[in-house]
Image (cartoon, rainbow, N blue to C red; front, side, top):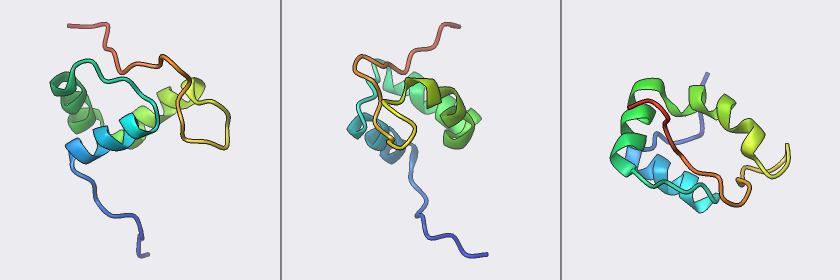
Length: 69
């Protein structure tokens, strides 16, 4: 099976998320979690924060925040 989506670096993944309205207050921490958990695993948790089921844009004020230090 051939995939058509290109591989994105962690910085490119963050840029994509930000372009969709996600606020990223701590880029280093966000890159850590994207690198260790991966984009697609985290995307299931982002689903409730989307504007509607057919869009990839986030609700206003949605932030990539981590409660555990």
